[in-house]
Image: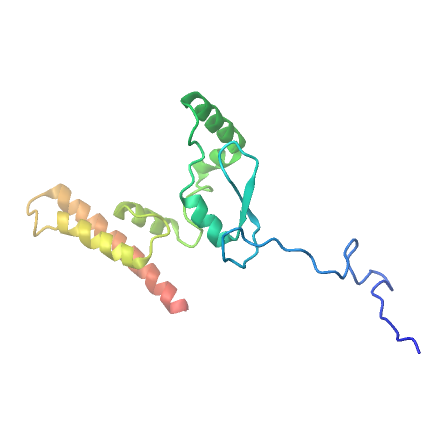
Length: 177
């Protein structure tokens, strides 16, 4: 007796995707030795070479941290490539005046970004770095250290306000869970 095989080709719409089969799809693994993650982030092996490594996002970030795109190029070639890339990103540059292209990952408010700028920190700095930077800078311009210096007092007030903004934001994040 023949066993009935269910088909996915009946009815409308088809229950299987067009052009797809039931076979397993090949997955390229990360080129980093020992990594078993999916390697879907191409990275150049060397400048001016079409060959690529394929890394997982974690190893691609690690690789790109030390990558210098302009290494080995003379000054004219560097300027030509930089100009070409600026031309391709003209829409992004044009939007920067409206602060659409601002820094950060979108999790911080504009006030938080300004406070981080006053403290001299990157937009993705954690609160421990904020506390450390605030203490370091506040020690330099504290009114007890520099009595009678109006500029130092103003700078200290800016640091205080920046710290308060960032501390309140951190408290809100902790409260939300």
